[in-house]
Length: 154
Image (cartoon, rainbow, N blue to C red; front, top):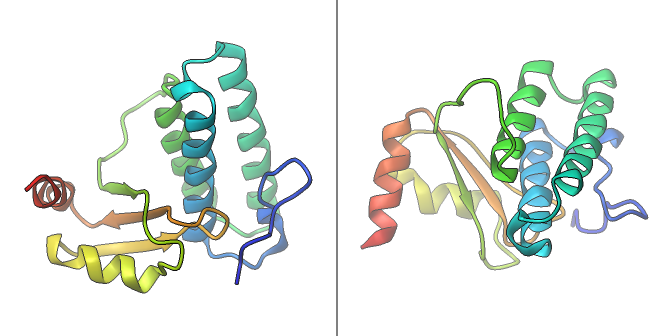
């Protein structure tokens, strides 16, 4: 498995080159989600959120420099994480992503795709390598996200 690829600080090491771009994105979103849950919903000190975000940004820069992720993809990931943290971002991102939490720890990307493909065409999906039970589904259309939300409300 891929569990255990974390540094002494608890942050995943994305610079090894053994993860896909979508896995890196998913792991960054998992770390952000986990940080928010651990820090009282992210309502902690402004400096704490900024410090977490700066660390994430520095790690993303290394990933791009080492050629493991394209710059535009990294930028989108940083914007997604900033939005989760409630930090101001320059422009709104298209709402084509669904974050999935509390999945079985043994869930794999294939399971995620099978569970969500009925709601629309999926661009890509991943389960966080270092965040069991956390996944990301990116649809081709924002309408698919709305169908997903409606489907899980009933």
